[in-house]
Structures are given as C-alpha cells and as structure tokens.
Image 1 (cartoon, rainbow, N blue to C red):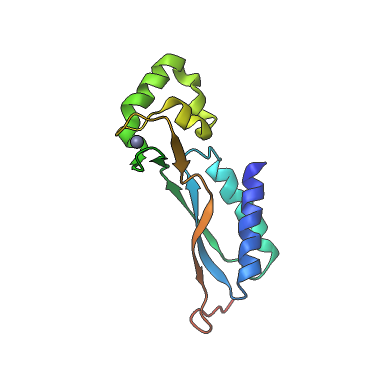
Image 2: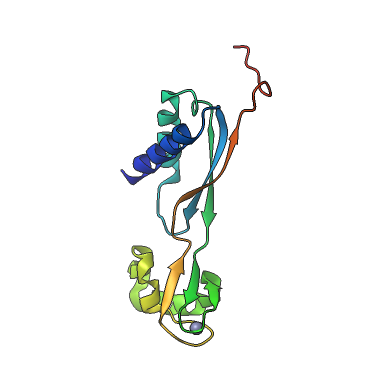
Amino acid sequence: MHEWSIAYSVVKTLTDNFDKKVLKVTLVLPQFSFLDLEILKEAFDELKKENKVTQDAELKIKIAEPIFKCRNCGKEFKLSDVEKQLNEVRSQYGEEYPLHLMPELFPAFLKCPYCGSHDIEAKGQEIYIESVEVEESGAVTRTS
Ligand SMILES: [Zn+2]
C-alpha cells in the first residue's frame, strides 16, 4: 500500500537525519494525493516504534492546495481560480471525471484564466516533510 511506503520513507528520513528523539513531524501532502490519512497515521504509528528516534514522534499532516503555472504568460493560479472551468469538466464527465484520478491531466482540461493557454504545469504535487521538532538535550525528561 502507498500509505505504508510513505510512512516508511518518513520514518527512514527521520532516522537518517536525526539522532535526537523526534517529537513532531509535519508532512505536507498534495490535495489530490487521495491517500487514506487514517491508514497513513496507523502505518506511521506502527513503524515509528522500531527505533528510538521516532518512537515518540507525532505525525501532523497538512494538505497543500495545488498551484498551477502558465508557461505562456508566466502567471500562477490556484484551483479556486479555475473553479468554473472545473465545474464544467465535472458536468461533462459526471463524478467519474478524470481529474480525480490524474492530477497530471489538469493542463489538458484547464486553461490559464489570464491568457487562455493550455500550456500549464501543475506544481505543489509533491509530498514533503515541512518541519521536524526534536527533543533538545535535557529539555524533556522522562521518568517512566
Ligand atoms: Zn497564461
């Protein structure tokens, strides 16, 4: 499952880069990742037990709205800027409209709200760790 491989790479990134205990990690997911966040959290909670660095880490998830950039006029715009166009695509294809499955297809269906070009690239589709909070030596003590 995709969720498990993402949880695994988060845990691995943390253990590769930190030797202090990680208390919190914030993961950014694109809005159209269609991951099951519950499964992702479960997977993380399971995998984090395997080592000292991550065993107490809390996983925070942020959802990033995609940003589009027009290669023709250079302007950037958000999904909300092309809401009307999206609704048209939806009414054409019904609930099975292909953007659900393939965010990469956005440029094929959408045009730049400024110049009308279809030469659009989608940004903000990547999954990344935004921030990590680690335990400072002596700042957190555990008695149990
Ligand atoms: Zn444009």
